[in-house]
Length: 262
Image (cartoon, rainbow, N blue to C red):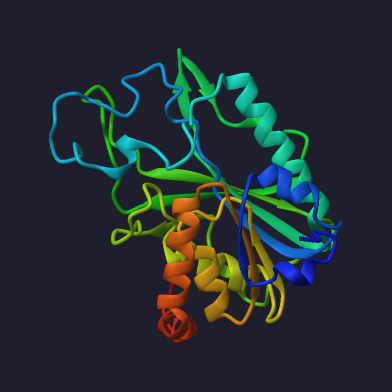
């Protein structure tokens, strides 16, 4: 494929390494990037993701990790990789675009991993807290973790869509429950981001597409999407979900339009 012609990839899931694919795409070709990379969860100094005591989380999909990716890098290598990914995202972004980069803070060996090593060279405009209505706890020594962090990294000409600035910076959404991916985005979260940060016919990129939530939400809002995903299993899952939800995606804007999503 000729990656220099971005039109060939609109409204498609590209199966491949996100960094490799993004490096072949032309400058300033997307309006919005919404993504949540793997969190390097298997590289953990706690009990990792296995408590060993069973309980209500013993069958959680996240215990088995991701398909085709072990999620276990040395911390410095992981930070370098994610920083390179953000650098490519920034290059692909138009002058009035923004990146919504979802990640998770944690403590390892008594030190805070607040992802500063990844994001500190990029113009962060705001930090948004996504408070999940629920969560998974594999360790009896910790309180249940219920939030994630969204870094809004914006180009100078980026502005929110009218009235979107009335939202607070703490968003509460229920996790996606009926999804075989171990860590799926909720549709309502992606809906808020896309409607707050883009216009019809804009192009939305998710370089870690996972189960395709960004794609089906973009479809329902009449945006173009580009998805990149390294796992063949998740690419198939995304394509099946997209095909299954072509009609449903048209109803997304109706489903959420008249709701107060605070």
